[in-house]
Image 1 (cartoon, one colour):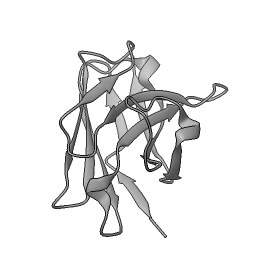
Image 2 (spheres, one colour):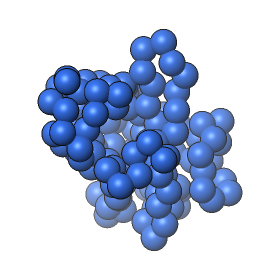
Image 3 (cartoon, rainbow, N blue to C red):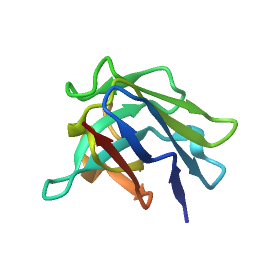
Length: 126
């Protein structure tokens, strides 16, 4: 069973930065693409970004492109989300997820992810 544990969320003013981390259990972390999603109150969960298994390729939603950066450290079984120039509309619960084996790149569809973390709250005040 794979466990994903997010951390790093919090309250920040508009224009500020936060760095989220997602630690994964298991020995095969480097074999899987990883992604970040978010869900704001009253809205559906939406794709934020994804990174390929070896960290070579990344893909971002238009809404965060140029402000957010995804990265991973396979030696530490951890994926990161650096969020800069935060806006109030970035307020949401952020989830990391592991894509299913063989998922076609880029993996933007939440249905293609088979393991999810519990989420971490990010609140951006205006």
